[in-house]
Picture (cartoon, rainbow, N blue to C red):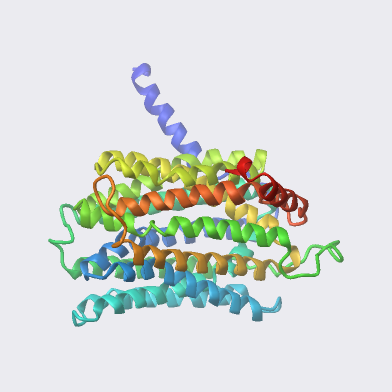
Length: 451
C-alpha cells in the first residue's frame, strides 16, 4: 500500500514545492502584502492575455483581414503604447502617483476590450480594420503604463530577490494563463474559422475585459512606495539620460524582438488558415508554450540569482534564435506542441533575465524614463518588423510545404545574425562601457570571428 501511494505523495510534494512562495526576507509588511497581491493581479491579467493572444489573430482571420492588417495587429499596440510611455515618463515627477496612472491605463484597456468584442457585428466592408485599430487602442492603454509599473515593481523588490520572486510570480500567472487558454479552447472544441461565428469572439473578448477589470482591482489594493533615489549616488551618474551601456542593451534587445515579430503573428495564421486547426488545437499548442514556461521558471530563477542575469540572457538569446527552424519540417499538432514546450522554456529564461538585466542597467536617478525608452525602442522595432512581415508574407517563395514557412526561415536567419553580431557586447552593469568598446573593435577588426 505504501509503495502504491508513494509516487502520488512524491508528485504532490513536488507540486507543492513548485507553487510554494519563495522564502524572501521582507521585513516591511506593506511590501510583502503588495507582492502577494501582485501575484493575483498578474494571474487575472494573464487570464486575459491567454484569451487575447490565442484568439486575436484567429478573430482577424474570421473577419478576412489582409496580412498587412495582421502585421498591424501585432505591432501597432506596442508601438503606440511605447511612444505613449515616453510621453508619460517625460512629464512624470516623483511627486506624482505611479499607481493612479497605471490604474487609469488598465481600466481603459478593460473598457476597450469590451468594445473590441462588438466590432464583428459592424458592416462587412470595414469591420476588419475597425477591429484591428480598436484592438490596437486597448493595447495602447496596456503598454502606456508599462514603464511606470516596471519601475514600481523594481522599487518593491530588492535586487538580490528579483530572480526568485519574479520566477515564482511568473510561474503562478503562467499557470493561470494555461488553464484559461485551455478552458476557452475546450469550449470551442471542433470549432474552426469556417464553422464558428462572431458570437464566440464576443464571449472571448468580453471575458478578457472582465478579467482585466479584476486585475485592476488587485492593482488598486497594492502599496505604492515613494519614488526613491538611493543615497550615495550623487556624482555617479554619467550626466546623460541614456548612457552607452543602456543604449546598447536597448538597441540589441529591440532588434532581437523585431526579428522575432517579423514572423511571430503569422504562426497562428499558419495554424488556422493553412493547417486548418480547430480552436481547441490552437489553444492546445498555445498552452504548450505556457507549460514550458511553468516548467522552466524555477530553474531560470535559481540560475539567475546564482550566476547573474547577464549569463542567462546570453544563453537564452541564442536559444531564442533557433526557435523558428523546427517549424520548417512539420505541421503535426503533437510535434508543434513539443516544439512549443521548448519555445516556452527558452522564452521564460529570456524574458526573466531580460527584465531583470534591464532593471540592473537603469541608472537609479532615471529608471522610469529609461524603462520607457527601452519599451518605446522595442515597440518601434516590433511595429516596423511586423509591418514588413505582413507586407512580404504573400510575396515570398514557397519552401517546404507552406508559403509562410519562408517567413519563419527568414526570421530565424535574422535572429542568428542579431545574436552573433550584438549580444556578446551586452554590458554587465550600467557603468560597463569598456565591454561595448572592446566588442565593437573586435567586430570591426576580426569580422570572421564574430559570425
